[in-house]
Amino acid sequence: MILSGSPEISFKINGVPDTSQYLIIDIGSFGDKIYYAFENGGSYYVGHDNMYEISRETFDELIQYVYKNEIKDEVTAESGVIMINDILYRQNGERINELPSDAYEIGLLENILHNRNEIPERNFQGAMLDEKYAGKLLYQSKDQDDKLYIILIIHHNSIII
Image (cartoon, rainbow, N blue to C red; front, side):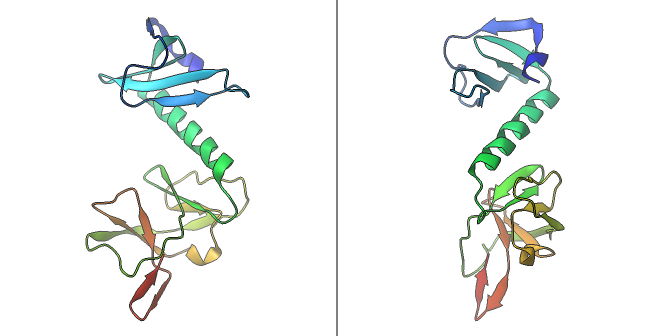
């Protein structure tokens, strides 16, 4: 995937890319093979010292690959993940008394993968979660779209997510 860049459209960089956001791809076991991927002016690039133009599809695949591998490396038995809109959300176990006032229903958690090394591959699928989460409604806040909410128990005006 990294080698799919176009040699016709390339340029050199010294150090890290001169952009505010970029993806770091470490393919060496000792941190010795670092590649960067980033978007600049509607074009996408990947490389080490020489940056090569890649397609948006390849860029998206790199993001998914790196993010899934980070989750595989960091996930413990207690922390699950859910995929919504092709984004993986990690369980944090936070408990709140009520949903945010701008929370809205986004759908049901359709199923849960149970093998330790499985990562959701489709939307509304979870992994490494207790079975009690399956079939529960998912909510998201307009102001905090980086969080998902699942109501497990409503007891004396408490919502446990």
